[in-house]
Length: 137
Image (cartoon, rainbow, N blue to C red):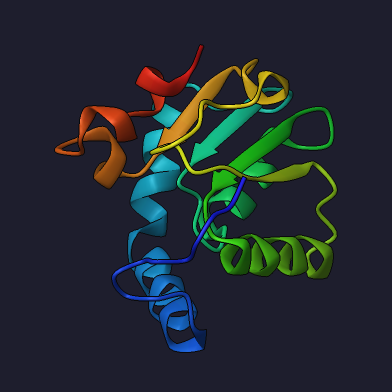
């Protein structure tokens, strides 16, 4: 499968920094929401459209050693950033998968999960083909 990094705002260092700032601004609200919907230790959590993985790192902390996070994005650059951050933070329960959900279904190996985290861009107002549930077979 050939995947291009054609993000409107790019995947360069400045965009990684911008997304990190955005995550820090919204982090407390995301953590609160994940707690309210029942994300907890031992679960397998799916982060669709994980980008550079700032939320996936938080989800890995929630899932703990007995759980795992499957982080899916189409950008190899973003996934490399996530893998590096996971190593720096000593998190071994994250699996990063490069998938373009506009073109491909989720691989069978990532279809079993307890809960999912989906950014508003793919949950609301996105084309049907980009909807994560429409691509799971």
